[in-house]
Structures are given as C-alpha cells and as structure tokens.
Length: 303
Figure (cartoon, rainbow, N blue to C red):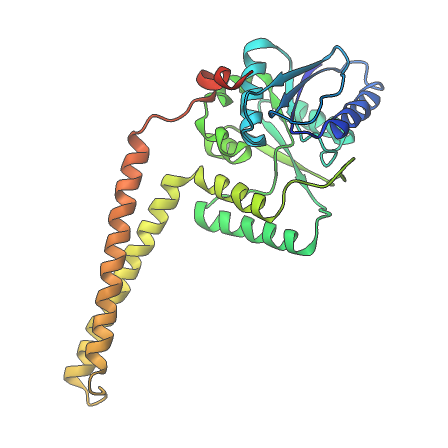
C-alpha cells in the first residue's frame, strides 16, 4: 500500500521531525506500507531542518494558513504523485503516528470514503474547550451540518482529483469536504500532545477558524437568516393586529401604549426588510461570481 502523507508546517520543524521519526517506527512493522512525505512549508521564518530522501518540502511564497496550505499540498500531490491513499495530518504531534494504521484499516473497509479522525479527548484549557463546543453548536445551528473532526484524515487517491476542484477547501478543509458531498465517515481517536512548544490555535485563531468553516455555507446561512427575517416580519404583523385589536375593541389599552408598540413593530419590520434585501443581493452575487479553484491556481503560491 502506497501512502502520501501531507503535513502543513509553519516553523514547527522539531515537532515535524519527531513526528516523521515516530511514523517510521510505526510503519516499520508493516512491510506492505510505504510512505512518502509532503511537507508544505507555509513560508516559515525559522531555519528548516534536514529531512531524509523520502520527504519532499514544498515551500510557499507567503504565509496563507494551514487550511490553504493543505489545499495546495493536495493539488501538488494530485499533479506530481500517485498512491493508494493520501493522509492529511498536523505536524505538531497532536495527530498521533499510532493512529495512522487505524485510519488506513478503516479506509480499506470503507472503500471510496474519506476517513476522518474524531478526537475523543482534548487537553486544552477549560475556556478553549468551552468555546470549541460552542462553535460546534453554532455551526450546526447555522448550517444544519455536524462537524466534530479536524484535518486528520485518510483520502482515497482517486478522490483527491475531485477534492482539488472544490473551491470551499481553500477556506476550510473539513468543512469543504462536508459541502462537497463526497462520501466520508469517521473513527474515534484520542488527541495527542504537542512534541515541542505551544499550540498556535489560541482563542482568536479559533474564532477565525470557526468563521471560515461557516463561510463555506455562505448561501445556506443567508437563506436561513432570510427565513428568520420573514418569521420576524410575520410575528411583528401579528403583534400589530393584536395591539390594534386591544386598542379599539377592549378597555385594556393604556393611553399612548398602543402607538408606541405599533411603532416598535414597524421598526422591526423595516429592519427585517432591509436585512432580507441585503441578504438577497449577497446570495445572488455569491451564486454568480467566479469561485477560486485550488487545482487551477495553486502553482502561483509555490516559491
């Protein structure tokens, strides 16, 4: 079984080298597995370490973030390599070398499916874990989809050619796969700990990451908000009719109360109408503009 392993790296060279060493130890017991590594250097500023001959380092000419680095790496592998599977993983040790075998075994059983590793345990602080859970719930509410995995996955090589033409992976890799409707499943794995240094995924990076995931569903999000604004307009109109009925047909009205409430409902209707109008133009613009296709543009980012 031939495997291409894709690792985005920004300055984390010691961790990446340790990860490769651990992977080599793991696969040394599996004579039928051969791995070639593709490290996407996201325009690192630290000096790069030396790697063995089976490691290819593709340097980008600017820092674009690990999601887009993964997209470029997939495009490069699709054009310049062949294998049975492509495995995408982080290079800091939090995606464990020992879990590669589990991904591959599942991939063999679930033919033509992308296999994600769903992390059961996390070791970050309380607030990071709290906001991560909150992000997943907001994502599900706004998009109608469930996301409980990151980048760690095994992709059948013949699916890579489909994936590199999915524009959404440029903003968010796993969200783009969900949106692409390519078949996928997941297995439970425990998150590892970093080999060296501290994680760069702080609170602000998590917010940006979450917004990128939601942005994949811009049109779906707009339609959901549009439906909500129509619901708000409907409720406001019902409120106006109720207040008018109380004012003219019952002795319950307080002087000046009906006018104030009706005016408030009219303001809500006006605001909801403006939001609906802006969303409508946004959706129409999104549907007509030319989207970024990684497979056609990725070479511009390689140094």
